[in-house]
Length: 264
Length: 331
View (cartoon, rainbow over the protein chains, first blue to last red):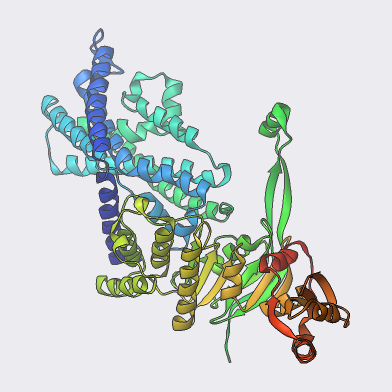
């Protein structure tokens, strides 16, 4: 793979996509207001849950806020990169414009996963980081190199798992053509990621760890922040992320053999 | 000797399709239990195309033209048979193969809708690993050939269909491909835009010796660009050869309208052994076989007092229309 070429193409993707989005100023403004209101609403909802009982699943409100912060960052990443690109796969397949992507001398997965960017998602990422730094202060977390490295690893793994899940569902469009519902179900499950995994019953915990790995997406990175995570959990997260990434890649290449293109 | 750039042998393609009975009952049945059947859309076809050739694929809707084109450029896996394009197996979509081809579809677009076409050109240039200077040079050359300039800086959504198609061509040709696959490129364009596009393709083929495979329902596209046509009927090739030979075969006679000086001359001409289509006063329309046109006209001009004479070609659409419904042509 020619890394220089891919960097050059990604720079062009960023440029064209930002230019396209900036054509619609009002839309960006609405998205920004929505992001702020959505975060305030989520914190308010979380505070209601903790109003009567100081602890949920062994987590204090201040600790649970870390999960909310990580969720906000991941949701921002979803809205910035995954949502504009991966929902477009469905459109590409339904309308047959995937033909143009497949005939370009560039990796098709890279192309369809990174062509677009939604700048309003950046604010959500920024808000998430603000909230995270606020949580670090109120929880009196000691920032050191190993803590930062582990946090970075677990958050990167969360992003990989989230991307792979989304990409996997979008790829099934090649057979099923319409998969909007499946993506909406995935998004609904991700909302659950705003709450500590321990706050759910045992059976749900198993479900959210094995079938829809919400636990790996928000809870484990949050545990790292609070110094609650054990090494095997972090290693497991790395393994799960790697398996998800490789599987989604293989699945995409396999699915392309069944692509029949839309009729003219 | 000119080399074969495309070599297709015993190619077949089948698709699994599901059918649905009408009405609510049919819909519910279709939802729970789909009746699938395999449909062979391309049936054991073979042909080769030489470098620099312009070949038109003719056929009715659903005959399989686009499927053939998409298999040639590697978008669809063939079920049986072999395809070699510039020595590559298309469906492997190797980088060097992809740098050599392009696909232009009249009904689909790759330009970024909200931005001026120039942005899409530079994006494509970076995908084909062209530097800015080279890209600029190629854009300038192609835009001059297509006579488009200021429009390249206006958002695509505000351009006319003709301007958009010209821009699509630049985006698709910026990497100077050797093989162009064109699927109904003039669809929806007005007469002038169609003519300009054809002129451009002729010029491009002449200057670069690029091979062009074209499907179109506009017969003018086929007759003005393609010397050779491949007729596809229900997934099989019904004719592969020169277009003029096919036209002569399908339309062996020409109609000639002769204006005589007097009505008596017209009557005399009508009784002299020619097949008469109709006669109104001193005007008579006769049918003459293609291979005896010159000798027949010589006889008429020598023996009758003729004021004027018109040779009418049968409408091309009518002639080609016969191809779309016939299975086989032995020429």
